[in-house]
Length: 238
Image (tube, rainbow, N blue to C red; front, side, top):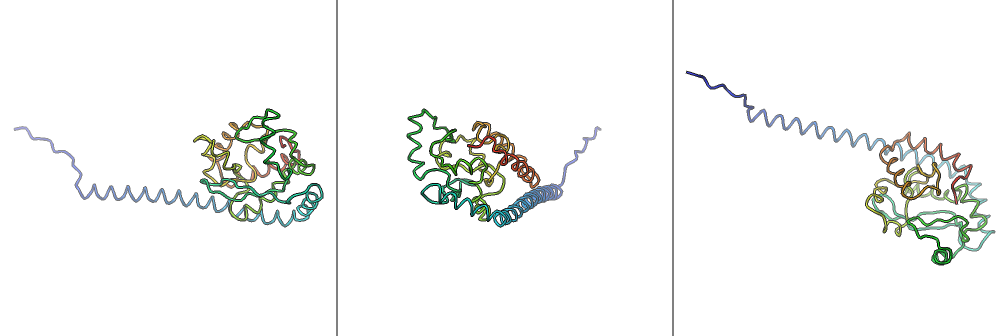
């Protein structure tokens, strides 16, 4: 008489225990990942706070000189505040030294029609007549961006990250363009040390995406170091 071979069947208790172990390992892996990400973000934030605070103290005499020059050069406010879009679409007040005439926004439409300037996602043009004499100098060397150190202290921005767009720009973003807003925006970014305003918008988006995928404390330090010669030589700025 032939014997029917016995099948190896796992007991219900063993199956339950296996599922529990798999679940615990999955939870542990996720917890370790979140811990690693939190540690990375904490190190970046701590570095941002320290550098921004020290920079404001060290550069205080330069900031005072710029304030005086803007006041003497043209009528209007010293600082320029604008609504910008930050991480996950959060709106915040973005600060710069004023580098344009007071009614610059009103003149924009006239420039587009009279000079045939395309109203692209990021409107910029060489030899913009709205820029003041002092404004042209502080833009070339990115001195107009220094008030954003205050945005860094407030937590609106980081020292390094994709540049924050205005709401009007975001309204015409594609879904891939919006991925740039997954992380906190920065004062400097990868494309600013690779050509600044000379780089087309599509290439800026690609470079920002590459940065987001590889962001780390040391990546930010390297980009900050690359920013120094880019600012000193004023390449691609207008």
